[in-house]
Image 1 (tube, rainbow, N blue to C red):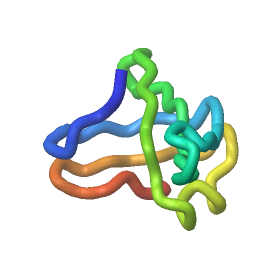
Image 2: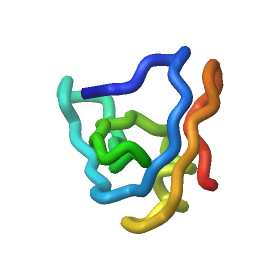
Image 3: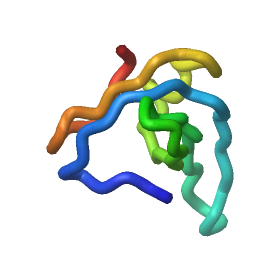
Amino acid sequence: MTTTPGEAWSGTVVKKSRALLDGSNLYRRLKVKLDDGTQRDVKVERDLWKELEVGDRLVKPAGENPRRA
């Protein structure tokens, strides 16, 4: 399940991945275990992806991009 812009959530990074899904653009994704126990796949910008490690906390306020907690 992916996130939508209007959602607000917080959780812990459980996996980092990146892939050339369309053959030309590198997509950086995180699998995040939310505080309610569900998991989400989150697409993030390069700078945030590089600064996060598995186990780090992430928050996403409604209407904003995810950021490190």
